[in-house]
Length: 295
Image (tube, rainbow, N blue to C red; front, top):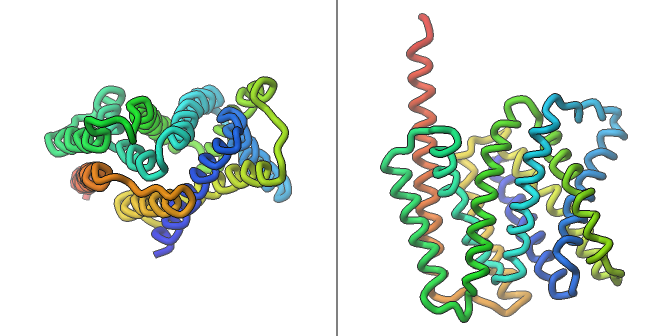
């Protein structure tokens, strides 16, 4: 129950962060500046918290170049993830993000040389059909460029997942989050010379809210996996679509068209099939490993 509660809180925080990103775009705040504060504030908060506790040593790492590579890939993914929110309505942008498990399957087959069976390949094909349903033949309400950015964001998130899985073997979650923010923030800060601008109180509060909600969303999402398995908590992630739809209706007076209501269940169903299959295969591998242990 604690794992589910933490995951549910994470979906709320992520949805609020994306809402604030879209609102800052309406205020004319450039995306690179938004990204800078999204990354800089978590790095400062984590470092300050550890310094106050005398635990800065927890940030020690033997894999700085792996963190740098993860920051490069993750920063690109975040640029696309936050960028698509400014192009598409919140609900549609959120749905496209649910294609990440499909790309994770493809990447696991290509990069990790993992054997992928017919169940997961079928789910990948069905999920991509769901994307085609949402995009539809008419791009007047859903521009093709926005769909491409959304799919690109999902692909990059899948690639980041592979990187984080590798880092998780030796690094604690707090360290991974810190270096992701601390490495990417200085590079994003370079754009402030050309895109930075003065803000009123509302603008600064929104930028601060993006950094704070993003940080605690990452922490609660990571913490949920300490108290529950991926298979048990991943279903909660799809609640984010309900939040995105609610914010879109409340703030922007937008409700998704019929194509989204049809395509979204297809994509969600395909990703759940992948999660279920991963769970089954994981249990099978554990059983096989236990059978090989000496009595």
